[in-house]
Length: 385
Image 1 (cartoon, rainbow, N blue to C red):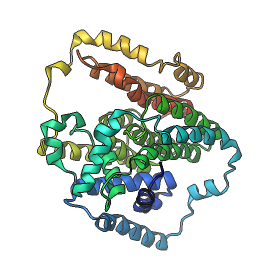
Image 2: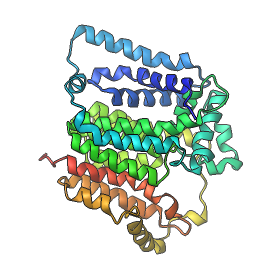
Image 3: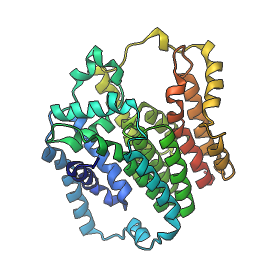
């Protein structure tokens, strides 16, 4: 199967929608993150959409950046990094991404979740040209998790505007783009080919093993990596943009953002935008009846906490004899990032402390978030103050 021209063009327009972020001396990964967050927020706030209407705000932001640049010429450090970059050391990363791409495009790395709700919600939203809360509230659609943040379905809806059906292979292929941009972010911000290759190889393998193509995990992984890279580079604005993206992608992304703000980015410039976005989405979901009602089968139980910890410890092996954790542990040097990873693991132990948690279905996908935090403990050295 081939990816349609519409999907490619609309995805390129996501970069264009985020080009206003050039004021932060951004690179291509940041443009895509900023564009995706901008479009998602617009699609939540606006009523019915048109492609041109959704581009008004990004174009206005770009014009504002152009005016600012006319007043003060600044060099773009990200562009300089790319122009001086030698690609030969990145061959291992490129090979890992190629293997991942071939696996994804053979439809061997996706799951039923993509069809049951991520892709289906995106197609429905595009057909209605709106975030269809009536469709989400329908009791027959409870399996689609109406309370989940909508960035990924909204991205799919954006790529489909004007068409009758979602480009399902294009949606799966977006996982390749997200992983490639995350790898590029690590290379640009850390200037380390070795860490970029390590990241691409490790997470390409885990994405294949967990069948996440088309699901929200690749997007969440991208935003998490970009946020941590920006904090490494002390760029609060880009960190805030990336954390907004994480908050809008999955519930776990909101937990990630809160942990990162509390332990790694304790500055109002980092904290305020994602917390505002999180509060806005929760209010939207509450007032539109999207928050799920409580179910006794999924209620927290202290009696399930110890079994949850034991089972979670087993799932952490990833079926690879704990090799990912061991490899990172040999390089770890930031206790703050280790503490953040442990905090997320504690969150996981609590949410799975339920009679019908079905940890074996989702835990290894969710575990990629604390693994990313742990990965950055090898990149970042704790600083005093």
